[in-house]
Length: 155
Image (cartoon, rainbow, N blue to C red):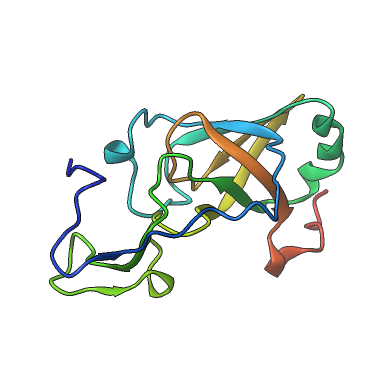
């Protein structure tokens, strides 16, 4: 794995102070088979391994009715990511691109978004497939997939 603090050719970092005008309250965490960023898949796959979303009290009560959806959008905080690159050279590329034109975890506000398949629920724990983050990643939010905001017929 490449050192995450070392710039690749053509990359540009900025010295931007972190703003203090927004706060997030993590509502739980994510458990995956991947202990390090280098172990994570490039993109989550719906046929990938089972992962667990753990929702902490009091937010676990907000899971009521979630079983009616087969596809969810998970928002999470990419807590291991640097936040200062405006131009990045993807490991599979040979030139720099703007951060906002990439799905890289390196972002000014490192929020991850994955569309996942809900496999099941047990109390405050959701079993899903399709994630791409390290185990222990802080959870920001869970939403029904925007394309499937109506519960499926079997619910």
